[in-house]
Image (cartoon, rainbow, N blue to C red; front, side, top):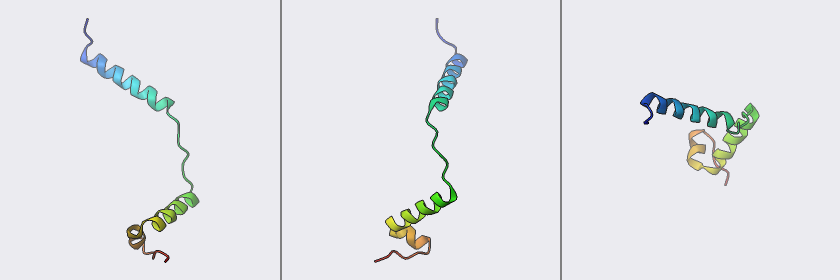
Amino acid sequence: MTMKKTDLYKNLALVTAQRLKNSAKTPKLTAADRAKSKKELAEANPLLASLMGKKKPK
């Protein structure tokens, strides 16, 4: 017996929902963490630093 197309989609949706439910949740960044990560990114990338209006230290 073959599965109907709707059964296949339902099965795929259930598998996807199960994976999302079981996946590890990442903690949300606080404002201080975001500012820190932006600063770190700007220090590592001179082009990004110039776009943010900061000069890379020599």
